[in-house]
Length: 558
Ligand code: F6P
Image 1 (cartoon, rainbow, N blue to C red):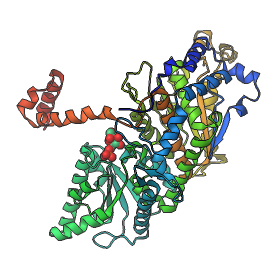
Image 2 (image 1 turned 90 degrees about the vertical axis):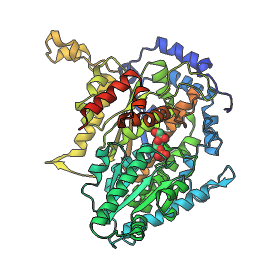
Image 3 (image 1 turned 180 degrees about the vertical axis):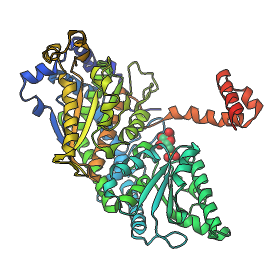
Image 4 (image 1 turned 30 degrees about the vertical axis):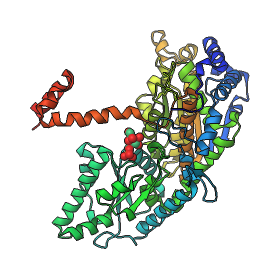
């Protein structure tokens, strides 16, 4: 397991300097804004179509200088360039990390492990686009000649969260008459509820799995196939092996890096869309894994989505560090988690369409940076990946914002909003979107500047409850705005967070592209299943707690 030498970040001069700053740090956003009328403009950076205001963060020029020095001293820029060049920076899996190649124009050149990666990417993209167009136009029909109305994506993790998030985000761009649904959980409820009202004759199933071995996905795919064939048998449409094969060919396609396994499952390899080991699952929504999205919003929309990713990639690769959004946001996260004690990070989109964005980011950030050994195998001696979480505003305001405003923990938060709504609704004369945006702005203002006891008293508040009504302020937020939530802007946002995740992992010297931590549970589930099914030797092999829970289950299962 070798790589360029991994720097222990705590041994760098910049880390020591930041430690010193954190000890003496006494942030006062009211005073800082009061003293510097240019603070808002000074700390606002535009990158691609994103307009990002950092001014309400707990940061000054000195902290910024040391954070950028830390990035330099830990080799962030070098690792970034090696990632873009296709070097095997995923050391524990000995793989290149090249999701950025998925969105590069066809005219670019990049050879990876002897293969022309850009040509490969565009060959698959064209196949996806061609298929998507045939489905959208009605040229692709089901076994009974009916066009597709519902696309069901069966996948989990990166083969689900990206597609469902992007589909939900881009609903206004979805072709009328087409709907996508998603099955991920091995809880039978998911497959049952998702298929219960579907017409199999107008349903297209996409089985998406990088490995095509994931228990949840393969089980769900088999269950959905059984539902589908059963319904067609009941209707007298599937009557023998030939009609069964014909029906599967018309209604089941696959997305995978393991095309041999796709064939074993019974899906025609001609109806399979490939990708490559150098695309991590959580970085794959812009590969063929996004086929459901490509069908829903069309090849032009998907191409625009990829252009957005690429615009942010170019920004990340070329913008100066002090104007580089992923560098700044990643290093701010390091500042908060390693020096100011933040354990979590909230992402709060003021867009209902982004309601799955925080869940998507949870896999992206936490599967990437939830590590406690470095790329050279040494244990880390500092905190790594924060817990990412969030919900759309304004719903979150009426749920957990209390803790962000007045709790004991610091929760750095990204607020995301768009100038133009997809739904220009009005409440009488009031533009609903403006009511919505006034909340977006009010929250970051309240978090930054708070409310002093004198201000509370001046409102005539009884002395006994003054302290309960004080807001300390100095709670850090970053405001991200864009003109509208379009395919392009969504691509930019996703790439922004991919690269923020990269920057943090690079500082920490960890491998952000493996996920060994999900293995053990998978292995144990296989060992536990026989015990649940009644094998007494398997039951006796369990620890006391697991055994007792299995016994409870068996006693109560009707
Ligand atoms: O959770 C582990 C994981 O390997 C993720 O990294 C991945 O996105 C998910 O399982 C699904 O994997 P696959 O696409 O191979 O089915």
